[in-house]
Image (cartoon, rainbow, N blue to C red; front, side, top):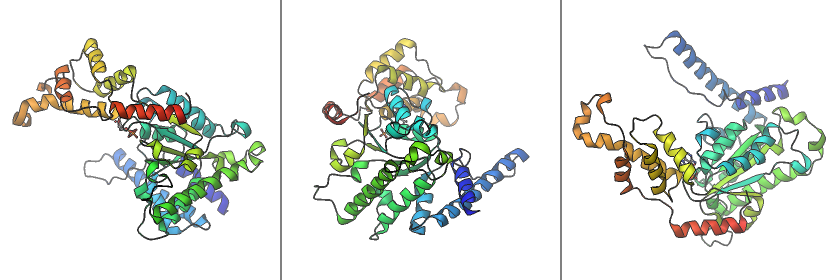
Length: 375
Ligand code: ADP
């Protein structure tokens, strides 16, 4: 029957296999195995589209076009990030496991008093791994991942954006467990007294808050969560939809929205050990001559760098050996290219600077001590 088909569609679409469709087309040099894999990738994509249509048909009171757009642009497939891909940030990882991953994987244990939070904010300087963490949470909790930003919700047609927001929440409930990741939440949930706020962004913000509240009250208001386990197998389940947001400007968030983020996790600049782990990892597949003491020196001189500054630095340093060759690189054998050395990093440090200023940092830390969750 229809309900069973819906549930099976949902399970299939939520399974890790379904979340990684890579559509490639057969080429002449393919082995039978390659071909089989590519065909199965195409099959998966077709199957996913059928399942999506089925889900869209089953949604009530949701604009079909908006729902299609959510599937096409907002649901993230593939591109998985795991905890180990993220250097350091141990306390943030722990908080996210406790607040989201464990409750999503063991909903039977997290009911009543232990009910999972509906909103969690990751804040801190840019490039510190907030987006990576959100992706890892989705991967590790086997959740459907919806990634939105202000630009993906803004539509020039009046009223369209609200339809998108409604469709977003409806699909998230249908495909739960779900993570609705809002990047740069400050641009959607900016302070209400901001005079520049236009009519359309005010409406998006209000609709988002309404939908988000309905989620919380629907689950919090029903006692069924304490006793009924029937929702734990992929059926519609309000309690496993989380709004996870990231911002570099936490002080610009509207107070009403800020209160809804029960957990506010500070994601600081990487400490020495984290910079060490990240640098080691970035260089692990490269030919280099950096000794243990070179790494120590590098760790010291990258104080104040964010994770993305470190990535940029390593990428630039890795170009050093190629830059030395100039045009000769076109005819040089790969094995003859010299390894990356500490001097390459030092050269790159001439123009790759930390993107966060000391003053900027002080601002984050004071917001963290006023509004952040401890731990
Ligand atoms: P944010 O969302 O905080 O602005 P991102 O998660 O988008 O930052 O990180 C940007 C890039 O910086 C990542 O793609 C990655 O290359 C690098 N990066 C940042 N933090 C880390 C980290 N802790 N471990 C590994 N890479 C990191």
